[in-house]
View 1 (cartoon, helix red, strand yellow):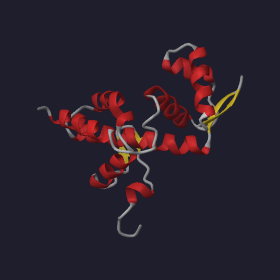
View 2 (cartoon, helix red, strand yellow; view 1 turned 90 degrees about the vertical axis):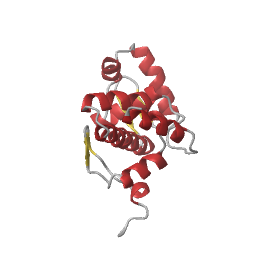
View 3 (cartoon, helix red, strand yellow; view 1 turned 30 degrees about the vertical axis):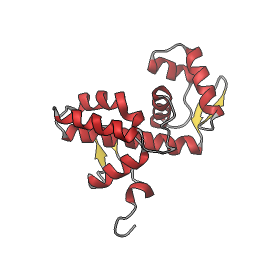
View 4 (cartoon, helix red, strand yellow; view 1 turned 60 degrees about the vertical axis):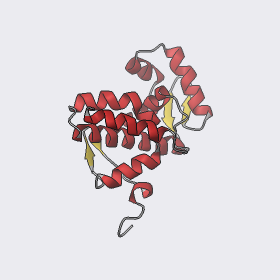
Length: 161
């Protein structure tokens, strides 16, 4: 078995862990929140549509759903920005992507392969699993895509925390 195949098997187990950290959210919505987070501030819906190669009406529908769920503030014809709840989720989604990508690179995948593979399954991995992996990896500060932030979850049980 190729080493990273073990990782996918582990990810399948984590999918079943009870958690309320966005596991119920579609991968598409996760990607939109991460994109808005990475852009910072207010983002035009047309920019989101262009980035994801989808029709603006599709973006408007999804943005309305995310705003209705409390993740975004949407001002029609001006754009969207993350709410506090949206920021917390997007921060975690970004951390999750970076921790998982770094793990796959450590298993021998190139940066590009790791990023592409993680995008296929990251929405199935719980916060608890990511916090455990982060601790096991020694709380890395940087992943292949940028800085990795740490929170109370991954720092729990650490000396001095």
